[in-house]
Structure formats: structure tokens, C-alpha cells
Length: 106
Image (cartoon, rainbow, N blue to C red; front, top):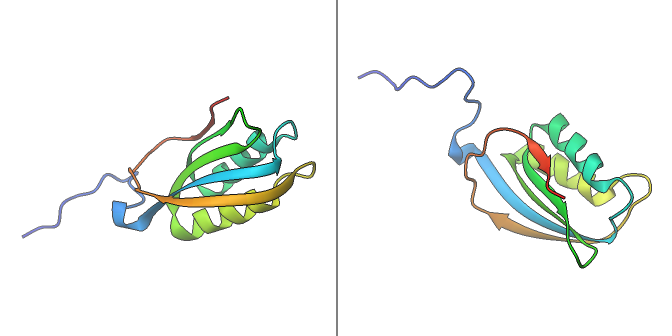
């Protein structure tokens, strides 16, 4: 019996993907954090979104290969030059096989 043919642009199976939600607090708004995260996600091949929250925090949903997501998380913890990340809460999420880009919501 033949193996199913996968589309050539399919880089991952769901079992290879991980998803995490991050909530970052500190000086994370008004310092270019969302643009920094968008650029980092693009470099790492991570999909998802980032948004400013009314309480002054930043929320991120990210999905990608485990090592890429770990590198992305390290960059979030560091932040851009003007940021001061005081706390990062990490929540495991269920990978949904999201495709596309990493977007800035608001």
C-alpha cells in the first residue's frame, strides 16, 4: 500500500507542532514590542498573533516547530531595546495547524 502524498508546501505534521500563549507584563507597550515580535516570528517561521491588552500587558498566541518556538520565546523574554519584560506567563495550547503569518491584532 502506498503512503498518502503530502502537499509540497506542508512542512509539518500536527504532531510536530506546538502552540503556546504568552502574557507579558512590564514596559511592553509603546516600545515597539509588537513589531519586534512580528519580526522575530517571521525569522523563526512561527505563526499566530500578538495584541496589546487594556491592562498594559501584551498577549501572544504562537504556533510552530518546538525549537523555533523556544527561540521565539527567548526573544520575547528579552524584548526590544526600549522594553523591560518583568513577567512572562506561559500557557500550553493545542496546535491547530495554523498556516499563514504572524499578525499584529491591535
